[in-house]
Amino acid sequence: MIDDPTELPDLRLRMREHVMTTECGYELVRRLVAGKSAVVPRLTGPPEIRRTSAVTGALLMARREAHRLGEAQLYWVDRDMTALALAAADYPSREPVAARRMPAEAGLVVFAEPVDDQDGEQVLAVSWSRWMPQHLDLDDGSGLITWRLNTPGGEVPLHPGFDGVWLTCWSPQLVPLAESVLPFGQPLIPLWSGSGKRWKHVIYTAWQLMTQSGSTRLVDLEELPRSRHGRKRDQRAGVEDVGTVRLVRVHARQRDAAPGEREAPRWSSRWPVRPYRRNTCLNSRLHAEGGCEHEERIVPAHIKGPADKPLKVSTRVHIWDTAPPSEP
View (cartoon, rainbow, N blue to C red):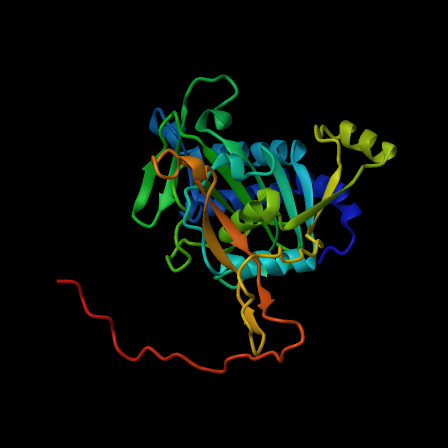
């Protein structure tokens, strides 16, 4: 757990150093050879060249991760905000992945508490950057590297015009666990699928919460600037980001209900409402003509009903003991 957000710039330096070590390089090669990497670099050319794909690809991936961390904006998510993102992510997003959801072109989010993933691993941090295959070409630009996505149906080659975001998740020991690429314009893989890792849904939900604005704003951001001494150390290490840490917390604002013309309902109790996603029209004047734009908004968990009424929590258990009828 990371209780002190001021540690993030120094953690970033250690992460960049680790990703370029021989130990990390061996792990990247192992995942590539075993077919366990979500992204797969392939060398083209004679057989003796193709046989070095795993080693060359691992080096490129490590170098790109070090560069990603070096330009990443830093975010620390407190416990309440982590709990909100986890609860909301239980209802996966159905909107296509969009670049505007990213709070920064490159970033590093560190959670105050680890996120438990589906395969039993814990994820403490996620780094990302906008990514296209040409970002990971060889230095001479010869086009000898081709990139593929590892899907349940096999490897799928990426088109040269591909546009998306590269994600890397990190363990509580700040060791990279896995990579993933989310293409823009396509929805996230459902959580119940074999490759629908929970951490991807949690980070995308956190982005949605962080970028949700206006009357539905749910997040407070506070900035902690890096010390002058720390900035000099970052510059010597090749870090491009200024080292400001953005604290991400649940919005503390309390809203009073606006008076209405209708008589208020007379509730006899209060009841809990779980987080849910609401499809919101952003251009209501154009809704009738079909020229409007819609966006998912996350409504956090809350207690509904008058404050002076007793809280009632349902203990009903729903059992599905028969399969739904098959469609004709």
